[in-house]
Length: 181
Ligand code: 5GP
Ligand code: MG
Figure (tube, rainbow, N blue to C red):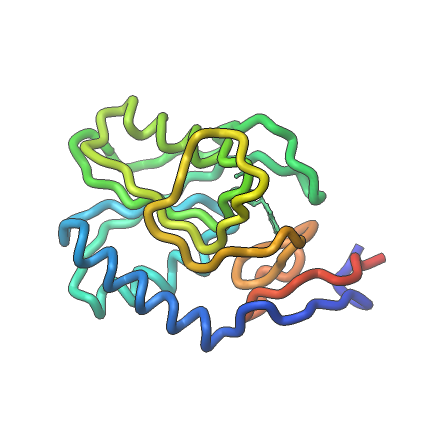
């Protein structure tokens, strides 16, 4: 497939996202230490994490950052239900105060898995920050500490989120109305 012929309707504009990121950064700065370790889950959260750490800098936080690739979805829109580590962290997490960043919290399987893994490795604390919350499909017992926006039960793309590897570059979050051919 390619992205031609698809239709994306704006749900959260880049201006709205930028404003919300500043608010989240201020909340995080007020509640967590200056020396936290940000763990961003790839690929979906890379744009959000990149913007949020710069908003955090403006709010006085001096984070370190590492990445982890987890997979719970294939290339389509259905959850596979199981989580695997495709690329592990490089940094030591023992004793660290961690801010775990992901794109969407839906069933909660991905973040429940990641949070447990970090705590098992001796992290001092793990807080969750997600760009979008889809609260109606929760299966695992996990809630986010910081939420960008509550998202309707629609398939969304852009701002790091993909459909079959396309649309990550869109500067806004949009609803994929029509799947590309
Ligand atoms: P869960 O919380 O179900 O374990 O996993 C949520 C993951 O499913 C997200 O990180 C994201 O990768 C994927 N996901 C869920 N809803 C959507 C959506 O609307 N759009 C995209 N692109 N991915 C989604
Ligand atoms: Mg994901």
